[in-house]
Image 1 (cartoon, rainbow, N blue to C red):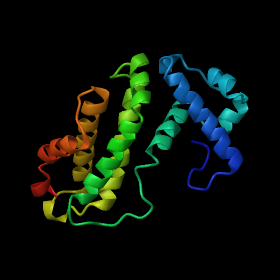
Image 2: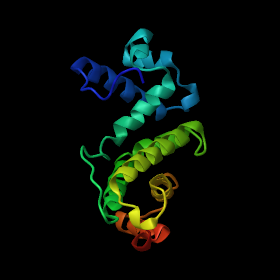
Image 3: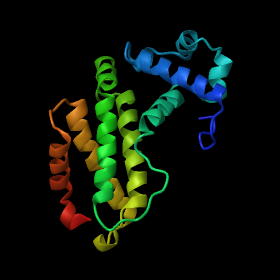
Length: 192
């Protein structure tokens, strides 16, 4: 992405980024990702192509920004090491809530895009990578004797597996049941 998200955006940038991301969300709810063009995004959001390219490299870059927007509720500013699996559960709950609050959008995306297609894989991989990054910073894996990256990758894959099963494959499970699935799949008491 060309725009530096580490700095606080100006009001103009917030407005522009918001219009582009809202337009992309709207289009994803109406047609397959492959049929969405930068021209169409710019026409609907009422910006010239030059403005689009001031912020994004291409439509894939905009999609990544859309996932970034959705993911804002997951992170906290300060992360500290903990000696239990509570951090995993806290972040799992946040991600569960993100998926739940965006269920309608996910359903619309799946209506027009293949479950195993590029767009859905982009969504899943974005959140898997986000969880891996968070878990590698927040959980103390010292008693496992395994590399932090390996454990964080395993945990994030399992978190995404559970959420994908519930929200993308439409299996009814509340948060408590999702915790039970996660507990059993990761064997949390022994593992972390």
